[in-house]
Length: 604
Image 1 (cartoon, rainbow, N blue to C red):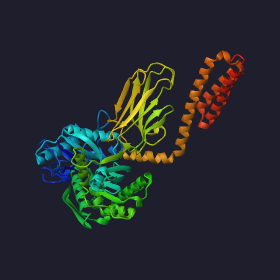
Image 2 (image 1 turned 120 degrees about the vertical axis):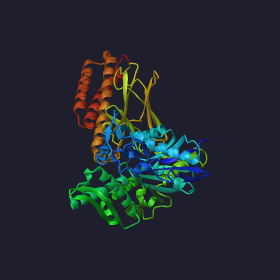
Image 3 (image 1 turned 90 degrees about the horizontal axis):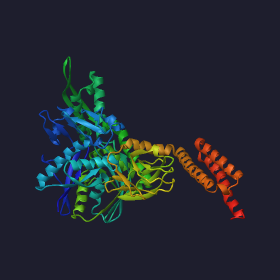
Image 4 (image 1 turned 60 degrees about the vertical axis):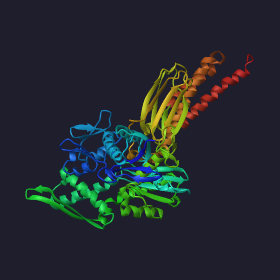
């Protein structure tokens, strides 16, 4: 059977691993390192460089060296995160034809998926050289909080690299696999995953052959890069104050600062003080200028304390959403290079009252989990059931703009749901299917994932056609929506592969709005539902009068018409559902008199 490899496609570094005879093994790249920098460059001689070689020349070739591309994959150009990051990256970013993102390398523009594919191609080639066999299949990891478009873009990168992606595996779940493979007792694990570009929390129940996700949270735009940026900005401000020179205007100086900031951050995980020494950082009329600064661990902690606290608050929020307390967690697993920071380890320990687990290299644990999943797929490792979940509720817009939930948040995947819907108007031959993602009750307040039309519906009275809508989320968390007219079997479907993306900031904003506007949302929903009831009753009332007009006396008929008019007016002007319901009750009372008249009539 062909070998399946596990790949952690990271923001800063990527790692490959395999399972042999039930034992995991992290593979070295061609340069002899277990970590491959997630960096791609076009050299001055127009040679494409990937990994360590690309990173080495970044200082002298910043405009053509692409890094941290994972922060851009699957995003729209207009996303807040993209607008924020484009101002601090040395390479150029622009909007693509479909509203996505493109980056410039050399004289060409590339999508983030293409850059990621180049990293995956190198990993594939290095593994093939190491193992002496062709690799065609892989399990690739991605953040648990990646939305549908980001997941689909990650999968596309693997396919561009010539890999069949057997599974997209959430990074925290991969870490739990690495830690929980040999566990036979039940344990509740919280995975605290602080990588270079993203922060993920997953709460998982690990038992014998089952890993079930109980809750997820995080921020797809919080990572080690933000810590580096704090050091860079501190040095820029300090140097401007000391020397009167703004290094932020010098791209070459910025790249040297980035390298030094990353190195200093890493050294301060074990040291209390480190030197940042950059000779010839810039020049002035007086001659060359140098930068020398002693950065202490306490200074770094002061610069980044709010980022650490933000991660802890997200952990607390995720625990609350899962109806758990810190003491309910048996093990805390630290994943990602940023978790080497002593302040992070201290804060996690303070929250849970126990030491987090650090017995597997945090840079490699995700790749090991991916390799274990690959081993399961190829039959080398005992079967383990992974129950992942959808991060946000998936809904369809119904009459009145209501977001009708099809797949609630935290539903285990893969999952499929079917429901029958109908038309809202007489002789309606076209139905628009509007798919949204989010927790708000009104569709317009959530994020649009897709819109498509189902046409060719035979003309009929409203409420008669039957349209079956299916929401299907596969094991990779990618959504497919299908609508079928039951009368004609005509169907239309869409796979959410290029949706308007949901950033983590947007998700947090939507959640806060959900809490802040709970009462207002409830009123809006009740109003929309009351309007729907009014529409249906008006339709039924007119239909009854038309059908039995010869048997209804003129006085009652006029009263019904008057009430219909009153209901229509209230429906269009009311600010709450109670006003409409009152008029609905009045009309219902008159309609009930029709039946009473029938039974009292001697002709019946």
